[in-house]
Image 1 (cartoon, rainbow, N blue to C red):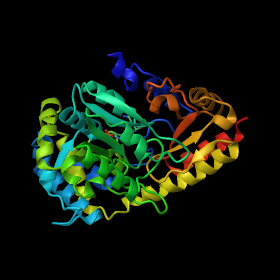
Image 2: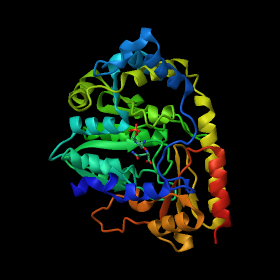
Image 3: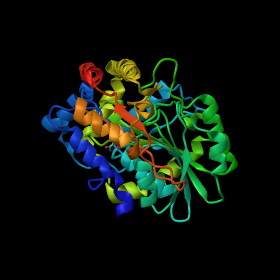
Image 4: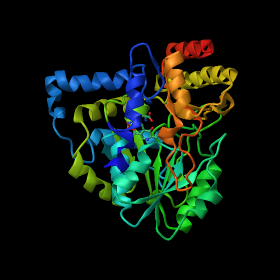
Length: 394
Ligand code: PMP
Ligand code: GLN
């Protein structure tokens, strides 16, 4: 079990998150909002529990999801991304939506369906900690491809060199956790070229799709020529509606690919919680794309915290989107974990060190690289308090 344990109760992730949740600590560790999740979703979900005409919504949904949520998801994506029948960025329907128990389950069932023993999965390093352990859990071999700072953009040549006859899946993430990079059109075209040339499936983790900053726009690999048929896109209500505890997400793909995912979904969780699916169907139907101003809030947080950390001597990577900001501690003479512990003790600010999101690779490079991740999906006063404490720190 030890090799899968890094993200679970036995690992350093949990140890640090428990410390960051202590009273008096400004917790910029685990990525969860401290502002309220969608009121439209919560109110509609609550009705299923109190309105006698809606009690049936407290029973199982069909495994692929409540019909109303599958429809609301397809309508939302078609509208939000201008997906059209017959175009490269083709329109999707309810049959292209599999409702999952968060993107975490989406990731597991996608990898389980698309890769197994003997197959290699390309994973960028650093990345979301679950990628490595989940790839291993399905018996596949993770192959790490380094992302280099300060911008952490993917290097397509390096990626191509890592492809072998055993490569089955390319796992990508935009906006990126932890580095905040949003893939450009050219990068997506590069991924698509490689996927088509080497016959790869792509799992595209797009859980932060609605949070982009400045000129950056969220672009979907599934909308590239020839990619819809070989892509599973992972999305999440955790991020879209700030409801991380609800454990609802969705995978978008062809009915053929989703059939494989559904086998594992059906046999593990069967369906996502029906009342919450209903709440999300209502909220998605009402969403005008502004997401209650959360993307602007997070962008402002990035600016505020980024400036304070720069003043303090950190090398800050300005994120283009997502819920995080990373800062290099090299100029301060600290390793990641050491600096995270220092911030916790001296400023009472909880952060995540590089050792969590840098996967140990075969080159023997120390995974405890001098990088820290700060969660910026927080209220403005939370970030202001963190900034005040960091500024005052000796
Ligand atoms: N992918 C990324 C990049 C994440 O940061 C997270 C964490 N929320 C997930 C997937 C899992 O999300 P969920 O809460 O929907 O399981
Ligand atoms: N996505 C969040 C993060 O990266 C939470 C992950 C988790 O704890 N499952 O911090």
